[in-house]
Length: 267
Image (cartoon, rainbow, N blue to C red; front, side):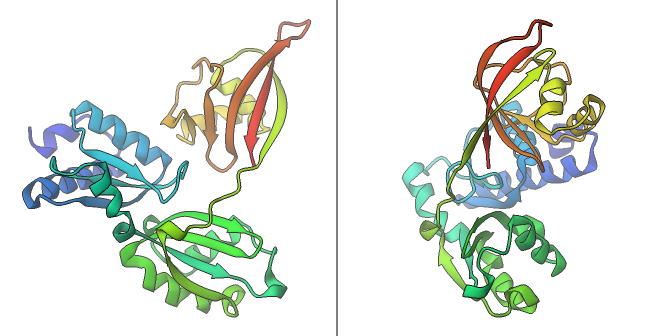
């Protein structure tokens, strides 16, 4: 089946472009008998690509973002002769870290938004940049290998980083993100996804529906646009721009029949 046939059911142009690039990588990997990888994909694209690869019954792929639980990842396509160890040996050739170490007087001042905003201000390609792991003393920015020197050379143009130490590090030297969890409780009229998102995002139910329809909500890593989807114990819900949440426990019901849910929120 040719590319046009495989993509005929996809209406969005961005989706077609993304999947077309994936098919090109598959073809290159087969013809050259070598490993191929894409630029970074966001959560929506990962879900889109994974469902597509299952649909066409293609199995020689992995996603990798530099560390476990990364949000942005590259897609790795490999020929049959590759095993997991061979793929892992190539991680360092695919991804690098651009490390920013702030001077003492700047430490603790910047959030993820400041680092990402700086990259956007420089006009650099977002798809070349993966997760940004922020600490008190700076940040590790995960990038595809061919982008490392560009970012390293461009960042000092920003006033906020002109006195910082900026270096290129191997992906194996990443400073692991410290996971902090806050436990909260919400009370919802039902376990519909729009009700849950409304509470988690602290917005109205109509606004929550907009967020879901904008394809910003993921359940267990899969993009979900069905407002009435029933949320289950253990589900991991990610709302782009709002955070990641785990449905930890159903702790009871109120007199009016509303459900009390214990939530773990990644902060």
